[in-house]
Length: 450
Ligand SMILES: Cc1cc2nc3c(=O)[nH]c(=O)nc-3n(C[C@H](O)[C@H](O)[C@H](O)COP(=O)(O)OP(=O)(O)OC[C@H]3O[C@@H](n4cnc5c(N)ncnc54)[C@H](O)[C@@H]3O)c2cc1C
Ligand code: SF4
Ligand code: SF4
Image (tube, rainbow, N blue to C red; front, side, top):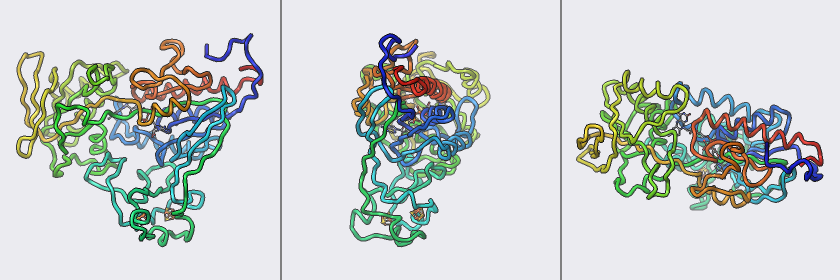
């Protein structure tokens, strides 16, 4: 069953046999590979300079504790080398017209100030550039910085740099040209005169796989701002062997190894007052994972997890949490942390343990907040351009929650992964493959069958 016209009402439409996938996270990667392997062209539009999405930022992934760079990079390389996939990184959809089988999409290719057709990704420009800024990929953590000309991470696909115009000395002071002068390929590869360009592409079907963002910590007014109160994504970067601390666990304020870490789940999620009554579905698991990985790194450290209740419904998930408790001594406290404040060079977390009925007051070095998963930045605008409906929280609305979970309100435009709502990697990948089958049905229809 799909949302194409019923057979008797189908009209003659010449089908453009290529697809557009919006978002190069694990969902978009899987969908692109499945469509391309079936013999159809895919345009993969990613707004950052590289595909990979959130998964590539993680230390290890539950429940099997695989290294995401080891399992994700080969897929990214496959996408990069696939003869049927054209990656348009650092690009965004500007407008869409047409209908199923024959959409016309205008894509904005943002100015990179580097001629990617000539650049070979040698990295000399990044070594020579003297301007440093906090790295978005490392969530702005203080441990290392990126240059004004940069690739977001070592395994980036495509592995070519872009210039951050807001910080580059050439644009801010009009003086620097170091990268241009040191590029071994000579004049013109660095091109300060580049501008955004608009390109028009025709596609038969569209997949929205634009993912999620975490709610900003500042949205929680009862928790103070402090460098040692971080979110789950920041802690992933700290734990990650290829991250800014090379996997050494340090607290951001002074680089000291934390002896006690408090993890708090459901921060923002399941809170109607903040407009997020839904469950983010993965925080129970990734906080258990992070507590376990913290104990791997700091054997004699203590991890505490405040939780409302445990939602560990995936295959092997309940066993994983049990392992964290039984083998790694992670201490679970049922209840809400109501207050976090600085106490000298440590933090204090106060709350209630609703099982024992006692007040809890923990002195610790680091607090990790399991913030709510939200639709990614700019999602509303993207949905508006596509003309598809979003739910009250901003995720894309599926046509039918049970039987049409990947179809949107517009025939030929499909949704997959966390763009539809919070979910883990196995579900996102399954949805990526599922959505590919929907797209293949459209692309393989004979003219007149839509
Ligand atoms: C801290 C944390 C730890 C986690 N750990 C695990 C784990 O161990 N195991 C597990 O199974 N799950 C884990 N998850 C869940 C996992 O991150 C998601 O299931 C997965 O990343 C979803 O992939 P996605 O492709 O849907 O979204 P994303 O990874 O968010 O990718 C979306 C992509 O779309 C791009 N994009 C966004 N908007 C646009 C636009 N307008 N145009 C073009 N491109 C756009 C983004 O830049 C990004 O590259 C964790 C989640 C968090 C928050
Ligand atoms: S030095 Fe030149 S060729 Fe090398 S990565 Fe930089 S722009 Fe590309
Ligand atoms: S012009 Fe200078 S500041 Fe700008 S990216 Fe090149 S080397 Fe860095």
